[in-house]
Image (cartoon, rainbow, N blue to C red):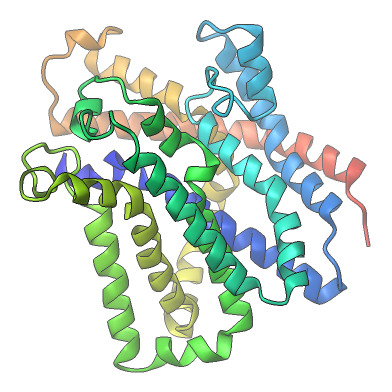
Length: 359
């Protein structure tokens, strides 16, 4: 369990939000630099073509797997199920909803930030505000300290505030805003930042700080009731940790990414490694893998443990766990490859060709 601390805290989604904020902001800034303006319409068409067709296919398939009503389906179609406290039909649907809400905001936000002439200070103000909103939610929740993370893992019902701090965009903005900040900083202050990440001593120090923050805030044994987080520290530290842990984790991640961006040798090796045919295939299939992997985990579980009732499983060993991972990965990847080629790509191209304005 300790090795999985970064998974207990679901920080993978935080990295996705951060990278989304960075990449989409960079795309918009490059577009404005090359064309003198940002086409909001084209941005929305591209995002819709990428996300909506396969998402609706997934909604149809997952709707057969559970009970729901018409309002649940409608809120899922509109990407607002968590905002309206409705059932999310796709297990990972909450994170896609949050990203879609951000996608709607980001081109408008970039245009407004560019008009101010001071995008970085404005983003810092937005970041501080988002951190304060999250802290205020957590600190003012009377149930938060009485139902801590290990209790939730063991089946205790989290409070409304605990759920909102995880699912709603206003409490998860820090990763997205930090991604935008990294993009603006890289574009506007490139020459000022670059020397620090290429200096023999300073670059190593910044990289060390980045790795240290990732380790501390990514691998804290949050699941273990006997850990330092619960035994040696007080309630104030627990509230502080749960409020700002994601922020510090992404600060560490951004320092590591900047080290890569400003080190041509490392960056070239990384691009060569991730640019090979295998990773391109994975990259092309990653969206259907993201949407559909849960059923294949279930299938792998049934195959390995020879039961459809999890209560029948009284022990788990490492070999069984590895087999579940391997089987589910192979099945999900094969299924997603077919879905990408015959469903996702044709639908995506049809929407782009129909609605995308060509310059």
